[in-house]
Length: 315
Length: 315
Image 1 (tube, one colour):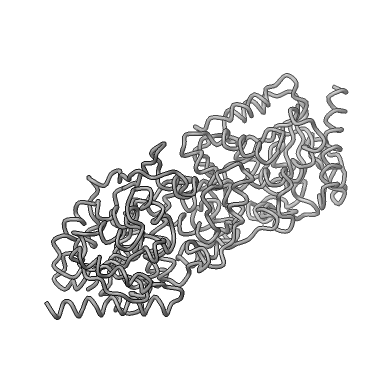
Image 2: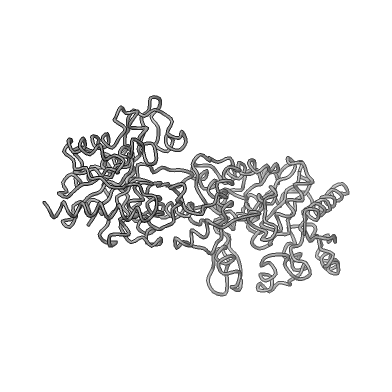
């Protein structure tokens, strides 16, 4: 049994690789819902959707989010009616939002709706929203404190970040399946996908029940660095690290994750940092981590799982 | 001041003509909402939308409903997710439903939302849902009693009709602007557009406040026959008349509307029926009523308005 923690694009890519390597009943992907928000009367869950679309082979390879071959007639008509256009909802994507909203209003939980959507999309592994309760990532900036999508989409990550808060996290109940997976005696490893440490991984562990189960798990805990060669593979992670006064490197990631993980997988471009990461008491395996295509994803997933197995059998 | 009562396609066509002939502040179109229903968590208002799209020049001329140049990516994705596909919602059309649903949930009335939508679509005249309260047309058949869209769309009007009920009508409050328009001292005529008498016009007059104001109005009341040459121009009106044991003709329409209207406009194809309609105590002007293009719509609107004015000035 493997548990992976994932946010959006980078997380979804490794999750895809894992889903092609592991039997469906041996993989649970706990997904950040701190990015979720209400928009046009719909519950939008960007990271859940990115993971689902990626696992289903429907993801748009160019944008990294949304559905491949997406069209925008809905959005054009929304603009014609004077509606908000800053957050783009594609025509196919809308089916997900409408279905989710309808079932949530009918009293289903986010977990139940996600399970049903995954089933329809032919996804066999468990895609688990971290909580059915609302947790909302807030971005503290040198100016206002911003709701995540305001910061991320509307303001294009321009404000200077000073910190984060996860509203609702303290009282949010952990997804029961996620907590159970982290406490499963058959658990072999917990993986942090190469997602943003601050706004993808941190919100998941801000849910007390998940944090507790995660810390109690006696298995290898392995993160794949989302920073390669001093830059984020995608998204604002590097910009955030810089603004928070952290070293913008895999070493900075290692310092940030210290105490949580046993190993940080470094890209070959960062092999020179391995000794410094190891000096922090972490393993620092080096391998190609860039996932440009499905083969890359499967290869990285296999390599990370091999590491976990080797450490488990050695201990 | 002119008030027109309208349902879907046929009604919208004459409404379009009227809107091109009359100053915007002298035309109020009272629209049937008995066809409205909740679908996928949205308030769908088919007749309001058909009237709005037609007045805005956005209507699909081939289907008679929906938006011209519509696409169906949303619908395809809904089907992929196992959602209901029997009621087709186009990608552009979805923007109307989402906007309406959002504002209704925010506490706006259907009238307020409709006004805002019309403003955005550049519609100057008043498009007035008959009531902000839910009225739901039920179709009694030889089998089950069916919600209107079940009968109309899902079952394609196949069940044999035995009658109708308008759930909620008795207690529904009339749209205040519609009632005011019918009671306006400057009112010159009330027109029944060539809409279905049973499921478009009847639900409007089933709202007590509108029925009362309509009956009290001392102006020419003129219907345009939706039955031409013994057939409905569009929709199930003729089939319904047959199943209800009525004469499937403009004469049958005249008998049905007797006591409500002063005149039934007959198409030239039905000129032979004029004496029989007149024998019922109704005027029976004859003119071309088929509206194949915008010119036809404007010409019919102008002709009906001329009749109303001539009768007003003569009285």
